[in-house]
Length: 322
Ligand SMILES: Nc1ccn([C@@H]2O[C@H](COP(=O)(O)O)[C@@H](O)[C@H]2O)c(=O)n1
Ligand SMILES: [Mg+2]
Image (cartoon, rainbow, N blue to C red; front, top):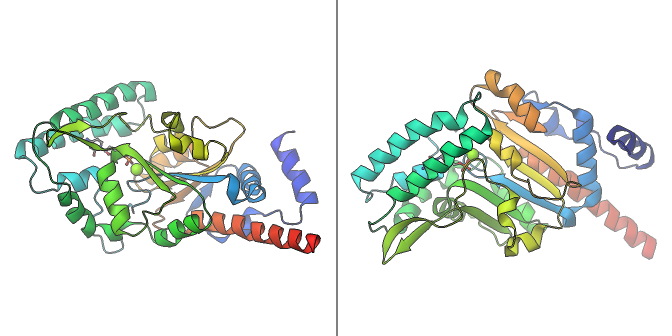
């Protein structure tokens, strides 16, 4: 059955069918939705599926963390946290910066096809790993820097993570950044809960010296659920076909690739830079685009709608059985 017809039928038969206008943060002026019917349909599928079918997949840098702070203080990326560690050799920091200025423009170039970009991204991450070889490093340094940035998470992040934990919903944080920094920030922010799994690039050591990154390399354009295949986490989530995806880069919209085609996926994109230039592209790949929204209000509103309906269903079945 085609989607609008199915939605129409649900609207007629399901007294709890929710309209997008009933979800307050989705009505804000900075919330852009290209296809309201489609989002309404997916949201209702998520609501009817309940928490047991749900998982959340999110990027870290500038998605879990803010893109802009109220007082203008900077938010460091996970690589930025590492690069601020005092004991790193000067040559390493200089060369890393050189690579950033060479490859970052390619990563965000709106005119270059993804296939072409991917070649350069593999080159960037490979060279970054090669620079990280042969010197000692104490990971407590990451912890010290990360502690200073523990408040850089979006407003309401703490509530979001604790709600997901309470509802037993697995959270996958997919980061092409540095996993050691991601873990450290989440830990200091007190949201590294047992339902949270981080897939990212982690430091490797050999004979007590740094030895690049652990495999597999996660870069901007290969972060998707296909890299989970065969892992314990895949076993945990592969039947959870209702997914909330959150990201701040175009490539993040693809993070749920690898899940069954029948899945219901709602993609939330946080847009901050060059809004006018990027809005259309973001609206083409994300179902909901939030412009300069530094909160977790939208994912929280979706979760509340899902939880509220689940409660009603439980009460109904309790009344029916008693
Ligand atoms: N050596 C590197 C490699 C990449 N980056 C940037 O990190 C970003 C990580 O992305 P996530 O949003 O997935 O966390 C990536 O977009 C690169 O721009 C870097 O800073 N240094
Ligand atoms: Mg990001």
